[in-house]
Image (tube, rainbow, N blue to C red; front, top):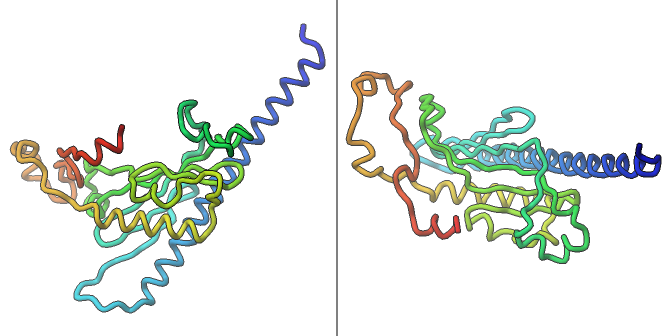
Length: 230
């Protein structure tokens, strides 16, 4: 039978760990709301910019629910999706070597907002086999500090977990970098061998239900991508 003091210790541990995760969750959710606010403002600014163009180029924002938002522009879609669980960086991650985390290991617990890039036509024509790409992950801790993991174009913004604090200004910078990366992340012609065969069903299907898979880098593997995965 456990003693009252030991019971109290385990109860204290439960409460402390639970409160930490709740705080991180709230900060991550607040960050997603900041992104929604910034994107809504950017869309309004875009429509008031009166930039002359031969074609109508959309820039739209959609609130997709409590944990998701969508930005559509120039044939691309960015989806910001918040994970509802809290994570800790692996022991070997360099974050644990920083003085900021060594002083308080609870700072290494983070919520995550994933940024995915899809083609606009994938949604428009319901091409459920099309490929989307994770271009970045935003980690937010109990202090509202953040760290970005992903493509180097996004990582270059903030790599200082100790001093990077999430606010509207930084959220706007992240969104702008994600948009610039996405626009420059062009759709390439797939390898011939990947598309040389087609079924009769696929050829007679309407465009809306086409089963041919499309993705910006489908069938390709670049040295830059391989280096980033190492």
